[in-house]
Each structure stands twice: as structure tokens, then as C-alpha cells.
Image 1 (tube, rainbow, N blue to C red):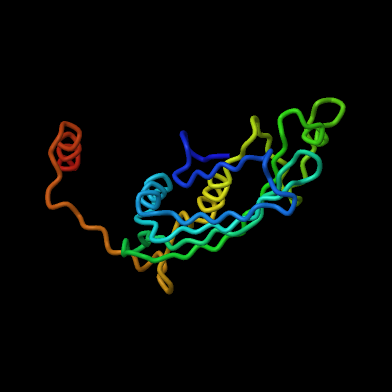
Image 2: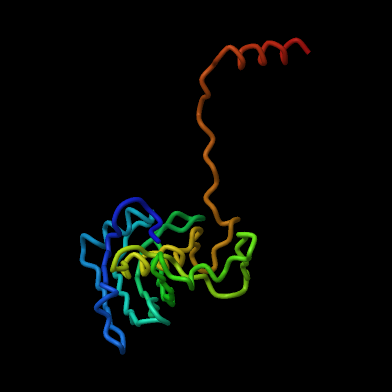
Length: 186
């Protein structure tokens, strides 16, 4: 579930065995330390705000369904101009979890042990062990997937990149010296 080793900076375990029938509302507002950890883990300049509003509900017999939204304000650098860039993330969060011993988790497999996938269909359920799931880690996963890996300021194209500076002098080495001698002989 997590995209990095260790516990999520916005970890929020929910005990599945104690879920109310109508579900449980969960709101995660990251504090300054959690936002700094999120920025470090996801390679952005800053995470100025992070809020996940989730509904955790029983699903089928022993499963859990999580639905909601993650909203964040992050700071990145434009890949063309390297100027600071403010970005907004608004991403839907959805996940289904089944206990490891659930028969429903095996329904996607054919008799030969192959898993049948529909690329356009919904994601299959995730398997969990124990009596809790980390809905904060799920929200962080969707947050990470929503980050633009190549942020660009509006109206900027690759041709707007600053010109590359030539170095004043390149160090002489044996190869450069041999090439200079060869070119002088002609």
C-alpha cells in the first residue's frame, strides 16, 4: 500500500473489527512535521497543506471500502525555468480491502492460477492481515500518484529554457591534446 519503506507520515490505522455499520468518517489534517516528511518522501519542494476526508465502511462480509478525497497545496520547481511553482492536488481516493483468509480475494484467479485483469476496470481488492488498515497510507498513495512529475508554469514551453552556458576553459587531458595535434597536421 505504501510507496516507501516504513510508516506513512500521515498514518491513520482504523480497526476493522470495530467499524460502525454506517461507516466511520476520518479526516486527516497533516501538521507541519508531517507535511515536511511528505515533501521529503515525494520529492517536492514543500507541502503547504494536506487534508484527506475519508469514509471507511464495511464491504460485503469481512471487507472494508474506503472512499473520499485528498486535497493538498504543494510547491514544486518548473522543469523549464526552475522557478517556484504552486500546485493544487484534488484527488479522489478509493480502495477495497479484504482479509487474507477471504474467499472473495481469490475470485479473480482462473482455475489455472492465472489472475484475470481488466485494464479499464476498477482495481482489485488489497489484502490485509490483522484487524486494522492504514487509511492514511492509502490517502498518501493517491496524493503521490497525483503529483505532476514534470510541472511547468502556464505558457512556458521547452524553448523558453535558459541558454546553456559554455565553460570558459575545458581542462586539457591526453585525449584533448591528441585531438588538437591531429587537427593541426591537416
